[in-house]
Image (tube, rainbow over all chains, first blue to last red; front, side, top):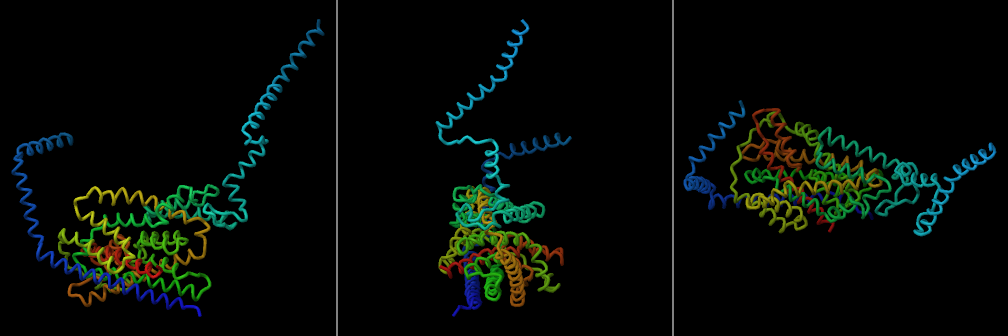
Length: 84
Length: 443
């Protein structure tokens, strides 16, 4: 007797859709667990101020603000000249 | 005296006439000596030489198909495939050029595929043979499924999974849209069961139905494993329909949703920390190792590319993956897939079946995604606009843009793009999982 291809196809469908849903549902579950852990123990808010502080401290260390301002002024003047 | 002059003139004239004759005969003798020395070139009259040259031209090959001829790979060729088949295929590649250039249908892939198809239909040149350059590209990266995986790496490096991490439940929409794959699989076997037109085996039906995943590399990967002969048609169908997403999807989306549903506004997505983004590719890879090792080549390449992107310390590598590497491999992949557009492979009734089934797969996937989103909207406490369900078919980022566009037609202030990116990237993972299931069945 010949196997019924359609029944085979339907079996594939049941297996495939179950696996796809199972996989993605597991993924959602694990992602939720990870996000609760991450937000509880490594909250993002702490990271943000640190990076800002670092940026400020490097500015202070360099102390070349005058030079930078001079460069900016010069480039603006140059730009205006070119425009004219 | 008069006589003497006459005799002299005659002698002079004769010598003038005969001299060239002597010279040419001596040249001839030199030539025959040369021929005798090399023993290869047989002296031929010029008409025979032109005749032989004509037989090595494309015109002769098109006009005079031979019985029992074989293609560059040693497979038999029908007379039709040698003559009209090739002409028709060349015209089809011109049509693909038109679609790629004038209509902008996925030109990055359709153009190389079409040019590869053009080269594959040149008679006598054997470009797609094992020693031809396209044949070499095919053997180097498509036969062994290398190129689709490298493309997947680039896709991973280009994709931001942030929207999915911020709203994980939209991944279910990416799962629902894979219904298109399995729906068209049943359709394909039903066609071969009840009609005499097509006769797809289960393997072939599976390879065709993966078009519904709307993911070019996955389609090529599965086709090269399950039915390499149908790859040309499958790749062309997959990329054409991906390009046609803005035309195929909106009518289906409007059909299954009401005006009020299309106007639903969704809650703003939360920010995602870098640590979460780093954990995501590892999570997905671990799950696929545990549940579905068969799909780890695809998911492994995808997550590697993404991991390199979010790590932030290997910008050079991730930059190469999303630009130079993916571009180079796209050229190779396109030309190699084009070699399957040879007349003897493409001009068969199966191709029409593949094009039709691919379209059905796309439509079913879109509808399933939208319906799933409607169900989720009823259950979930945060509202979900059903329009983002259609983005569950992969086709990143085209499908998400379509969701956004249809949403904005109803309410110009409703930005759905980022919300639709969630199901969109989940669809990529979903179709990789579906591919893994199909491959594991036939292992």
